[in-house]
Length: 193
Image (cartoon, rainbow, N blue to C red; front, top):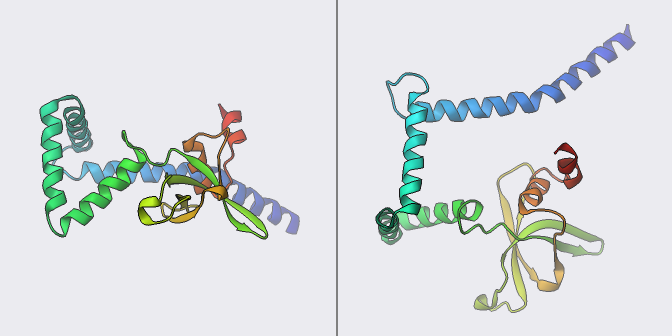
């Protein structure tokens, strides 16, 4: 009886391991869809989502392809940057979003950083500033180190000799490696494709 219970318990845990990523992903997609869909009230289900996504896509197109659209967005952004109190919120959000997506991506230089020499410990991160002389830190670089299983991280300033470029890994793979706590590896990604 004890052996059957152990087999059933192991099978249950294995089922959780198999279903959890699928269930959590489906739940997150549903939550985002539902949240966006309810921005416009009193619309049939799904229409609000289509309207919001279409509106954002049109604004994105106008802001990048048409000179007048780009000028309007830049002018509005400039007004927000000059408004006391609002400028810190706006500029912080703009910088964070543009560092991940867009033309000015900042997390595109993955590096290994030696954070301890005895014992030797290396962490994966992204060089965000190659020259820190303007802050009086010559031969120093700024490196962003993401936390595992979180969207947060911290920035360290270290001597240039303490870093080395990450090879055989794209910046996306490096971010996935860091955020997954090293569980996801490049070999796993290559074997799946």
